[in-house]
Length: 195
View 1 (tube, helix red, strand yellow):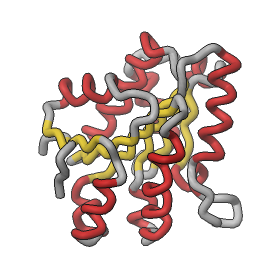
View 2 (view 1 turned 180 degrees about the horizontal axis):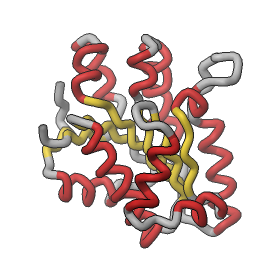
View 3 (view 1 turned 135 degrees about the horizontal axis):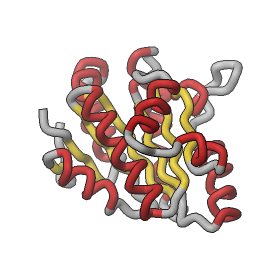
């Protein structure tokens, strides 16, 4: 399930590696449990707001939006202030990737809107932290492949980082091995949380 850019890191080293990700990067992160995903988004967002000067979009599948907001609030993030300023956007994955008529639209529409906001506010760019479980649990693998294949070329020259987060057991159960390999190749960085 690995490619040449796959890295196995402890949580703190992984967080540092993710923080060093450059705009234009499309990373795949396999986490072993929801606590690891929570650690990732809490700490990345906190560090981002303190020093990276960017806008964060987090799309969630396993955690309800209210849980994400409460979790950030509990770690000391003034979530109400940052949401009001438009620096954090938390949405359900379904709303990020699908229209009201359930047509797949991808995340680029929302991304371009946030990039315009970032320019207007003098921010360095946008980071997307996306839990990809929606595609697996609704059996929309074709939409997942379409999304993942198009992202790297779409964001290459944009001030956007995309962190595609997968629950490792779901990734292994719902996606055939060859398709896993193809998905890994659509990312320029693959990171594995330790089990």
